[in-house]
Image (cartoon, rainbow, N blue to C red; front, side, top):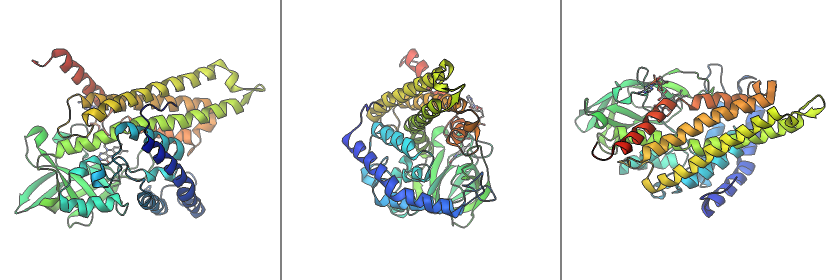
Length: 414
Ligand SMILES: Cc1cc2nc3c(=O)[nH]c(=O)nc-3n(C[C@H](O)[C@H](O)[C@H](O)COP(=O)(O)OP(=O)(O)OC[C@H]3O[C@@H](n4cnc5c(N)ncnc54)[C@H](O)[C@@H]3O)c2cc1C
Protein backbone atom coordinates (compact mmCIF):
# COMPACT_ATOMS: atom_id res chain seq x y z
CA UNK A 1 0.00 0.00 0.00
CA UNK A 2 1.28 3.48 -0.74
CA UNK A 3 2.11 5.81 2.08
CA UNK A 4 0.42 9.13 1.26
CA UNK A 5 1.06 11.52 4.16
CA UNK A 6 2.82 8.88 6.28
CA UNK A 7 5.00 10.76 8.79
CA UNK A 8 8.09 9.52 10.62
CA UNK A 9 6.24 9.52 13.91
CA UNK A 10 3.41 7.42 12.47
CA UNK A 11 6.02 4.96 11.14
CA UNK A 12 7.65 4.91 14.57
CA UNK A 13 4.24 4.39 16.21
CA UNK A 14 3.35 1.43 13.99
CA UNK A 15 6.75 -0.20 14.55
CA UNK A 16 6.28 0.14 18.33
CA UNK A 17 2.70 -1.10 18.06
CA UNK A 18 3.87 -4.16 16.10
CA UNK A 19 6.42 -5.00 18.82
CA UNK A 20 3.76 -4.41 21.49
CA UNK A 21 1.48 -6.96 19.81
CA UNK A 22 4.24 -9.56 19.81
CA UNK A 23 5.73 -8.92 23.22
CA UNK A 24 2.76 -7.84 25.33
CA UNK A 25 -0.46 -8.90 23.64
CA UNK A 26 0.45 -12.36 22.32
CA UNK A 27 1.15 -13.79 25.82
CA UNK A 28 -2.12 -12.30 27.11
CA UNK A 29 -3.95 -13.89 24.18
CA UNK A 30 -2.39 -17.24 25.04
CA UNK A 31 -3.41 -16.88 28.69
CA UNK A 32 -6.94 -16.00 27.65
CA UNK A 33 -7.18 -18.95 25.25
CA UNK A 34 -6.02 -21.29 28.04
CA UNK A 35 -8.89 -20.05 30.24
CA UNK A 36 -11.41 -21.32 27.68
CA UNK A 37 -13.80 -18.52 28.53
CA UNK A 38 -17.29 -18.50 27.03
CA UNK A 39 -18.84 -21.22 24.90
CA UNK A 40 -17.10 -22.88 21.92
CA UNK A 41 -19.15 -20.80 19.46
CA UNK A 42 -19.20 -17.61 21.51
CA UNK A 43 -15.77 -17.58 23.17
CA UNK A 44 -16.04 -13.91 24.09
CA UNK A 45 -19.42 -14.02 25.79
CA UNK A 46 -20.75 -15.24 29.13
CA UNK A 47 -23.96 -17.23 29.42
CA UNK A 48 -26.06 -14.06 29.48
CA UNK A 49 -24.52 -12.86 26.20
CA UNK A 50 -22.41 -10.15 27.84
CA UNK A 51 -18.66 -9.84 27.24
CA UNK A 52 -17.05 -12.57 29.36
CA UNK A 53 -15.34 -11.17 32.50
CA UNK A 54 -12.08 -12.91 31.53
CA UNK A 55 -12.13 -11.24 28.11
CA UNK A 56 -12.92 -7.87 29.67
CA UNK A 57 -10.06 -8.30 32.17
CA UNK A 58 -7.63 -9.18 29.37
CA UNK A 59 -8.70 -6.16 27.33
CA UNK A 60 -8.27 -3.89 30.33
CA UNK A 61 -4.76 -5.25 30.87
CA UNK A 62 -3.93 -4.55 27.22
CA UNK A 63 -5.23 -0.99 27.64
CA UNK A 64 -3.19 -0.33 30.79
CA UNK A 65 -0.03 -1.68 29.17
CA UNK A 66 -0.71 0.24 25.97
CA UNK A 67 -1.12 3.46 27.97
CA UNK A 68 2.18 2.80 29.77
CA UNK A 69 3.86 2.21 26.40
CA UNK A 70 2.48 5.53 25.07
CA UNK A 71 0.37 3.77 22.42
CA UNK A 72 -3.18 4.07 23.75
CA UNK A 73 -4.47 7.47 22.65
CA UNK A 74 -2.44 8.94 19.77
CA UNK A 75 -5.65 10.54 18.46
CA UNK A 76 -6.00 13.02 21.32
CA UNK A 77 -4.25 16.37 21.72
CA UNK A 78 -0.80 16.49 23.32
CA UNK A 79 -2.18 19.03 25.84
CA UNK A 80 -4.30 16.28 27.44
CA UNK A 81 -1.60 13.62 27.21
CA UNK A 82 -2.45 12.22 23.78
CA UNK A 83 -0.13 11.81 20.82
CA UNK A 84 -1.44 14.88 18.97
CA UNK A 85 -1.57 12.93 15.68
CA UNK A 86 -3.23 14.43 12.62
CA UNK A 87 -6.15 12.61 10.98
CA UNK A 88 -3.95 11.50 8.06
CA UNK A 89 -1.46 10.05 10.55
CA UNK A 90 -4.34 8.40 12.38
CA UNK A 91 -5.60 6.84 9.15
CA UNK A 92 -2.21 5.13 8.77
CA UNK A 93 -2.14 4.11 12.44
CA UNK A 94 -5.70 2.74 12.33
CA UNK A 95 -5.06 0.89 9.06
CA UNK A 96 -1.96 -0.73 10.54
CA UNK A 97 -3.68 -1.67 13.79
CA UNK A 98 -6.77 -3.23 12.16
CA UNK A 99 -4.72 -5.06 9.55
CA UNK A 100 -2.19 -6.38 12.05
CA UNK A 101 -4.36 -7.06 15.09
CA UNK A 102 -7.21 -8.45 12.95
CA UNK A 103 -9.92 -9.29 15.45
CA UNK A 104 -7.60 -10.05 18.35
CA UNK A 105 -7.04 -8.52 21.77
CA UNK A 106 -4.57 -6.07 20.26
CA UNK A 107 -7.47 -3.96 18.96
CA UNK A 108 -8.05 -2.83 22.55
CA UNK A 109 -4.57 -1.23 22.60
CA UNK A 110 -5.78 1.64 20.43
CA UNK A 111 -8.36 3.78 22.23
CA UNK A 112 -11.87 3.58 20.78
CA UNK A 113 -15.38 4.20 22.11
CA UNK A 114 -14.49 3.33 25.72
CA UNK A 115 -11.41 5.59 25.75
CA UNK A 116 -10.56 9.27 25.64
CA UNK A 117 -12.28 11.15 22.82
CA UNK A 118 -12.35 14.66 21.35
CA UNK A 119 -15.44 15.70 23.36
CA UNK A 120 -13.57 15.15 26.62
CA UNK A 121 -10.86 17.60 25.61
CA UNK A 122 -13.46 20.24 26.53
CA UNK A 123 -13.85 19.00 30.14
CA UNK A 124 -13.27 21.53 32.92
CA UNK A 125 -9.95 21.49 34.83
CA UNK A 126 -11.23 19.45 37.82
CA UNK A 127 -13.15 17.08 35.51
CA UNK A 128 -10.05 16.53 33.40
CA UNK A 129 -8.12 15.52 36.48
CA UNK A 130 -10.89 13.31 37.81
CA UNK A 131 -12.05 11.65 34.57
CA UNK A 132 -9.77 12.27 31.61
CA UNK A 133 -6.40 11.68 33.29
CA UNK A 134 -7.32 8.19 34.57
CA UNK A 135 -8.86 7.45 31.17
CA UNK A 136 -5.63 8.43 29.43
CA UNK A 137 -3.72 6.13 31.82
CA UNK A 138 -6.03 3.23 30.94
CA UNK A 139 -7.19 3.04 34.57
CA UNK A 140 -10.90 3.52 33.81
CA UNK A 141 -13.23 3.30 30.80
CA UNK A 142 -16.12 5.45 29.67
CA UNK A 143 -19.18 5.31 27.38
CA UNK A 144 -21.00 7.82 25.21
CA UNK A 145 -24.68 7.92 26.16
CA UNK A 146 -26.64 9.77 23.49
CA UNK A 147 -29.16 7.38 21.92
CA UNK A 148 -32.50 6.47 23.54
CA UNK A 149 -35.02 3.72 22.83
CA UNK A 150 -37.29 6.04 20.89
CA UNK A 151 -34.62 8.43 19.55
CA UNK A 152 -31.58 7.51 17.46
CA UNK A 153 -31.03 9.61 14.36
CA UNK A 154 -33.38 12.34 15.54
CA UNK A 155 -31.14 13.24 18.46
CA UNK A 156 -32.67 16.66 19.18
CA UNK A 157 -35.90 14.87 20.10
CA UNK A 158 -34.26 13.11 23.07
CA UNK A 159 -36.19 12.86 26.35
CA UNK A 160 -33.37 12.70 28.89
CA UNK A 161 -33.24 16.08 30.58
CA UNK A 162 -31.36 17.97 33.26
CA UNK A 163 -32.51 20.82 35.51
CA UNK A 164 -30.48 23.10 37.73
CA UNK A 165 -30.60 22.61 41.48
CA UNK A 166 -28.42 25.22 43.18
CA UNK A 167 -24.92 24.72 41.76
CA UNK A 168 -25.72 21.15 40.64
CA UNK A 169 -27.76 19.51 37.90
CA UNK A 170 -30.38 16.79 38.33
CA UNK A 171 -30.48 14.38 35.38
CA UNK A 172 -33.39 12.08 34.52
CA UNK A 173 -33.91 9.74 31.59
CA UNK A 174 -33.06 6.45 29.89
CA UNK A 175 -30.40 5.66 27.34
CA UNK A 176 -30.24 2.66 25.01
CA UNK A 177 -27.81 1.04 22.55
CA UNK A 178 -24.85 2.24 24.62
CA UNK A 179 -21.51 0.55 23.94
CA UNK A 180 -19.75 -0.36 27.20
CA UNK A 181 -22.96 0.25 29.21
CA UNK A 182 -22.14 -2.52 31.64
CA UNK A 183 -18.49 -1.93 32.31
CA UNK A 184 -17.85 1.84 32.04
CA UNK A 185 -16.68 3.68 35.16
CA UNK A 186 -18.29 6.91 34.02
CA UNK A 187 -20.61 8.07 31.26
CA UNK A 188 -20.78 11.03 28.89
CA UNK A 189 -24.54 11.60 29.12
CA UNK A 190 -26.21 13.98 26.67
CA UNK A 191 -29.41 15.61 28.03
CA UNK A 192 -31.82 18.42 27.23
CA UNK A 193 -31.06 21.57 29.25
CA UNK A 194 -33.00 24.15 27.22
CA UNK A 195 -36.05 22.65 25.47
CA UNK A 196 -36.77 24.23 22.10
CA UNK A 197 -33.32 25.79 21.70
CA UNK A 198 -32.46 23.58 18.70
CA UNK A 199 -28.77 22.72 18.47
CA UNK A 200 -28.20 24.66 21.73
CA UNK A 201 -30.82 22.62 23.62
CA UNK A 202 -28.45 19.87 24.80
CA UNK A 203 -25.57 19.62 27.28
CA UNK A 204 -23.09 16.85 28.07
CA UNK A 205 -22.61 15.63 31.65
CA UNK A 206 -20.00 13.32 33.17
CA UNK A 207 -21.86 10.85 35.37
CA UNK A 208 -20.22 8.32 37.70
CA UNK A 209 -21.43 4.74 37.37
CA UNK A 210 -21.88 4.60 41.14
CA UNK A 211 -23.78 7.90 41.41
CA UNK A 212 -27.01 7.50 43.44
CA UNK A 213 -29.94 7.12 41.03
CA UNK A 214 -27.81 5.79 38.17
CA UNK A 215 -28.29 2.16 37.09
CA UNK A 216 -27.32 -0.09 34.23
CA UNK A 217 -30.28 -1.61 32.40
CA UNK A 218 -30.74 -4.69 30.27
CA UNK A 219 -28.22 -5.99 27.73
CA UNK A 220 -29.00 -5.61 24.03
CA UNK A 221 -27.35 -8.48 22.14
CA UNK A 222 -26.64 -7.38 18.55
CA UNK A 223 -25.33 -8.83 15.30
CA UNK A 224 -21.88 -7.65 16.45
CA UNK A 225 -21.84 -10.21 19.23
CA UNK A 226 -19.39 -8.15 21.27
CA UNK A 227 -21.54 -8.32 24.39
CA UNK A 228 -21.05 -4.64 25.09
CA UNK A 229 -24.34 -2.96 24.17
CA UNK A 230 -26.89 -2.07 26.83
CA UNK A 231 -29.27 0.37 28.45
CA UNK A 232 -28.89 2.92 31.24
CA UNK A 233 -31.30 4.60 33.59
CA UNK A 234 -30.90 7.92 35.40
CA UNK A 235 -33.33 8.81 38.18
CA UNK A 236 -32.68 12.16 39.86
CA UNK A 237 -28.93 11.77 39.41
CA UNK A 238 -27.15 14.76 40.97
CA UNK A 239 -24.23 16.04 38.87
CA UNK A 240 -21.94 18.90 39.95
CA UNK A 241 -21.57 21.89 37.62
CA UNK A 242 -17.90 21.08 37.02
CA UNK A 243 -19.06 17.84 35.33
CA UNK A 244 -20.72 19.76 32.52
CA UNK A 245 -18.44 19.28 29.50
CA UNK A 246 -17.71 22.57 27.74
CA UNK A 247 -20.51 25.11 28.26
CA UNK A 248 -24.18 24.51 28.97
CA UNK A 249 -25.77 24.24 25.49
CA UNK A 250 -22.65 22.68 23.88
CA UNK A 251 -24.07 19.15 24.11
CA UNK A 252 -25.06 18.76 20.47
CA UNK A 253 -21.69 20.04 19.20
CA UNK A 254 -19.85 17.81 21.70
CA UNK A 255 -21.94 14.80 20.76
CA UNK A 256 -21.15 15.50 17.10
CA UNK A 257 -17.43 15.74 17.87
CA UNK A 258 -17.63 12.26 19.43
CA UNK A 259 -19.73 10.92 16.54
CA UNK A 260 -17.50 12.56 13.92
CA UNK A 261 -14.45 10.99 15.55
CA UNK A 262 -16.04 7.54 15.13
CA UNK A 263 -17.02 8.40 11.55
CA UNK A 264 -13.53 9.38 10.42
CA UNK A 265 -11.93 6.30 11.99
CA UNK A 266 -13.83 4.19 9.45
CA UNK A 267 -11.23 5.04 6.78
CA UNK A 268 -8.27 3.32 8.47
CA UNK A 269 -10.44 0.63 10.07
CA UNK A 270 -12.00 -0.50 6.78
CA UNK A 271 -8.70 -0.21 4.88
CA UNK A 272 -6.95 -2.32 7.53
CA UNK A 273 -9.58 -5.05 7.69
CA UNK A 274 -9.98 -5.02 3.87
CA UNK A 275 -6.23 -5.56 3.52
CA UNK A 276 -6.38 -8.47 5.95
CA UNK A 277 -9.32 -10.02 4.08
CA UNK A 278 -7.51 -9.50 0.77
CA UNK A 279 -4.44 -11.37 2.03
CA UNK A 280 -6.62 -14.20 3.30
CA UNK A 281 -8.66 -14.35 0.07
CA UNK A 282 -5.50 -14.53 -2.06
CA UNK A 283 -4.13 -17.27 0.16
CA UNK A 284 -7.36 -19.27 -0.02
CA UNK A 285 -7.78 -18.77 -3.79
CA UNK A 286 -4.27 -19.97 -4.57
CA UNK A 287 -4.44 -23.00 -2.24
CA UNK A 288 -7.99 -24.26 -2.72
CA UNK A 289 -8.21 -26.50 -5.77
CA UNK A 290 -11.13 -27.52 -7.93
CA UNK A 291 -10.62 -30.21 -10.60
CA UNK A 292 -6.93 -30.21 -9.70
CA UNK A 293 -6.39 -26.49 -10.24
CA UNK A 294 -6.42 -23.55 -7.83
CA UNK A 295 -9.66 -21.59 -7.89
CA UNK A 296 -7.45 -18.51 -8.47
CA UNK A 297 -7.13 -19.77 -12.07
CA UNK A 298 -10.86 -19.18 -12.56
CA UNK A 299 -11.65 -15.80 -14.03
CA UNK A 300 -14.74 -15.50 -11.86
CA UNK A 301 -12.55 -15.70 -8.74
CA UNK A 302 -10.02 -13.30 -10.26
CA UNK A 303 -12.82 -10.81 -10.81
CA UNK A 304 -13.98 -11.14 -7.21
CA UNK A 305 -10.40 -10.42 -6.12
CA UNK A 306 -10.16 -7.47 -8.51
CA UNK A 307 -13.44 -6.02 -7.27
CA UNK A 308 -12.26 -6.38 -3.67
CA UNK A 309 -9.10 -4.51 -4.59
CA UNK A 310 -10.97 -1.80 -6.51
CA UNK A 311 -13.28 -1.11 -3.55
CA UNK A 312 -10.44 -1.21 -1.04
CA UNK A 313 -8.24 1.10 -3.13
CA UNK A 314 -10.99 3.63 -3.85
CA UNK A 315 -12.25 3.78 -0.26
CA UNK A 316 -8.75 4.10 1.17
CA UNK A 317 -7.81 6.83 -1.30
CA UNK A 318 -11.01 8.72 -0.54
CA UNK A 319 -10.26 8.52 3.17
CA UNK A 320 -6.72 9.85 2.81
CA UNK A 321 -7.80 12.76 0.61
CA UNK A 322 -10.69 13.71 2.92
CA UNK A 323 -8.63 13.28 6.12
CA UNK A 324 -5.95 15.60 4.72
CA UNK A 325 -8.55 18.27 4.00
CA UNK A 326 -10.08 17.74 7.44
CA UNK A 327 -6.70 18.27 9.08
CA UNK A 328 -6.78 21.80 7.69
CA UNK A 329 -10.41 22.38 8.76
CA UNK A 330 -10.34 20.68 12.17
CA UNK A 331 -12.56 17.58 12.14
CA UNK A 332 -13.71 18.04 15.76
CA UNK A 333 -13.63 21.83 16.00
CA UNK A 334 -16.43 23.69 17.80
CA UNK A 335 -17.89 25.41 15.82
CA UNK A 336 -17.24 22.97 13.01
CA UNK A 337 -16.27 24.29 9.58
CA UNK A 338 -19.33 24.06 7.27
CA UNK A 339 -17.11 22.15 4.81
CA UNK A 340 -16.25 19.41 7.31
CA UNK A 341 -19.52 17.41 7.64
CA UNK A 342 -19.57 16.46 3.93
CA UNK A 343 -15.96 15.22 4.07
CA UNK A 344 -16.58 13.29 7.30
CA UNK A 345 -19.72 11.72 5.84
CA UNK A 346 -17.92 10.85 2.60
CA UNK A 347 -15.32 8.92 4.62
CA UNK A 348 -17.98 7.00 6.54
CA UNK A 349 -20.34 6.33 3.64
CA UNK A 350 -17.70 5.32 1.09
CA UNK A 351 -15.78 3.12 3.52
CA UNK A 352 -18.74 1.42 5.21
CA UNK A 353 -20.42 0.59 1.91
CA UNK A 354 -17.20 -0.52 0.17
CA UNK A 355 -16.16 -2.63 3.14
CA UNK A 356 -19.51 -4.44 3.14
CA UNK A 357 -18.97 -5.38 -0.52
CA UNK A 358 -15.34 -6.40 0.16
CA UNK A 359 -16.24 -8.74 3.00
CA UNK A 360 -19.19 -10.21 1.10
CA UNK A 361 -16.81 -11.18 -1.74
CA UNK A 362 -14.27 -12.50 0.78
CA UNK A 363 -16.95 -14.83 2.16
CA UNK A 364 -17.81 -15.97 -1.38
CA UNK A 365 -14.18 -16.77 -2.28
CA UNK A 366 -13.81 -18.78 0.93
CA UNK A 367 -16.93 -20.82 0.25
CA UNK A 368 -18.35 -22.68 3.25
CA UNK A 369 -15.18 -21.95 5.25
CA UNK A 370 -16.11 -18.28 5.15
CA UNK A 371 -19.38 -19.10 6.89
CA UNK A 372 -17.89 -20.87 9.89
CA UNK A 373 -18.99 -19.07 13.03
CA UNK A 374 -16.09 -17.14 14.47
CA UNK A 375 -14.00 -17.21 11.27
CA UNK A 376 -12.59 -13.76 10.35
CA UNK A 377 -14.79 -13.60 7.24
CA UNK A 378 -17.98 -14.50 9.12
CA UNK A 379 -17.26 -12.11 11.99
CA UNK A 380 -16.25 -9.25 9.72
CA UNK A 381 -19.38 -9.80 7.61
CA UNK A 382 -21.48 -9.19 10.72
CA UNK A 383 -19.31 -6.23 11.76
CA UNK A 384 -19.53 -4.72 8.27
CA UNK A 385 -23.32 -4.96 8.33
CA UNK A 386 -23.34 -3.24 11.68
CA UNK A 387 -21.01 -0.41 10.60
CA UNK A 388 -23.65 1.03 8.26
CA UNK A 389 -25.91 1.95 11.20
CA UNK A 390 -24.14 3.28 14.33
CA UNK A 391 -22.51 6.74 14.40
CA UNK A 392 -25.08 7.84 11.81
CA UNK A 393 -26.63 5.54 9.22
CA UNK A 394 -25.57 5.54 5.57
CA UNK A 395 -28.74 7.51 4.77
CA UNK A 396 -27.76 10.22 7.24
CA UNK A 397 -24.30 10.46 5.64
CA UNK A 398 -26.02 10.93 2.26
CA UNK A 399 -28.21 13.67 3.77
CA UNK A 400 -25.15 15.49 5.05
CA UNK A 401 -23.30 15.22 1.71
CA UNK A 402 -26.30 16.40 -0.29
CA UNK A 403 -26.96 19.29 2.15
CA UNK A 404 -23.50 20.69 1.54
CA UNK A 405 -23.64 20.17 -2.23
CA UNK A 406 -26.95 22.03 -2.44
CA UNK A 407 -25.74 24.85 -0.20
CA UNK A 408 -22.63 25.28 -2.35
CA UNK A 409 -24.76 25.19 -5.49
CA UNK A 410 -27.20 27.77 -4.16
CA UNK A 411 -24.37 30.08 -3.05
CA UNK A 412 -23.98 32.36 -0.03
CA UNK A 413 -27.20 34.34 -0.62
CA UNK A 414 -29.41 31.26 -0.26
C1 LIG B 1 -23.90 -1.96 18.04
C2 LIG B 1 -24.36 -0.56 18.30
C3 LIG B 1 -23.62 0.25 19.15
C4 LIG B 1 -24.06 1.56 19.43
N1 LIG B 1 -23.34 2.32 20.32
C5 LIG B 1 -23.84 3.52 20.70
C6 LIG B 1 -23.19 4.28 21.74
O1 LIG B 1 -22.15 3.88 22.27
N2 LIG B 1 -23.75 5.45 22.14
C7 LIG B 1 -24.90 5.92 21.58
O2 LIG B 1 -25.34 6.98 22.00
N3 LIG B 1 -25.53 5.25 20.58
C8 LIG B 1 -25.03 4.05 20.15
N4 LIG B 1 -25.68 3.33 19.15
C9 LIG B 1 -26.89 3.88 18.53
C10 LIG B 1 -26.68 4.30 17.09
O3 LIG B 1 -25.90 5.47 17.02
C11 LIG B 1 -28.05 4.45 16.43
O4 LIG B 1 -28.56 3.12 16.31
C12 LIG B 1 -27.98 5.11 15.07
O5 LIG B 1 -27.68 6.47 15.21
C13 LIG B 1 -29.30 5.00 14.29
O6 LIG B 1 -30.39 5.32 15.09
P1 LIG B 1 -31.64 4.30 15.17
O7 LIG B 1 -31.09 2.94 15.39
O8 LIG B 1 -32.60 4.81 16.18
O9 LIG B 1 -32.28 4.34 13.75
P2 LIG B 1 -33.53 5.25 13.31
O10 LIG B 1 -33.20 6.67 13.62
O11 LIG B 1 -34.77 4.68 13.87
O12 LIG B 1 -33.49 5.06 11.74
C14 LIG B 1 -34.19 3.97 11.11
C15 LIG B 1 -34.02 4.09 9.61
O13 LIG B 1 -34.58 5.34 9.15
C16 LIG B 1 -33.59 6.10 8.47
N5 LIG B 1 -33.73 7.50 8.81
C17 LIG B 1 -34.02 8.05 10.02
N6 LIG B 1 -34.05 9.40 9.92
C18 LIG B 1 -33.77 9.72 8.64
C19 LIG B 1 -33.65 10.94 7.93
N7 LIG B 1 -33.82 12.11 8.53
N8 LIG B 1 -33.35 10.87 6.62
C20 LIG B 1 -33.17 9.67 6.00
N9 LIG B 1 -33.26 8.48 6.63
C21 LIG B 1 -33.57 8.51 7.92
C22 LIG B 1 -32.26 5.56 8.99
O14 LIG B 1 -31.20 5.79 8.06
C23 LIG B 1 -32.56 4.09 9.16
O15 LIG B 1 -32.43 3.42 7.93
C24 LIG B 1 -25.25 2.04 18.83
C25 LIG B 1 -25.97 1.22 17.95
C26 LIG B 1 -25.55 -0.07 17.70
C27 LIG B 1 -26.34 -0.93 16.77
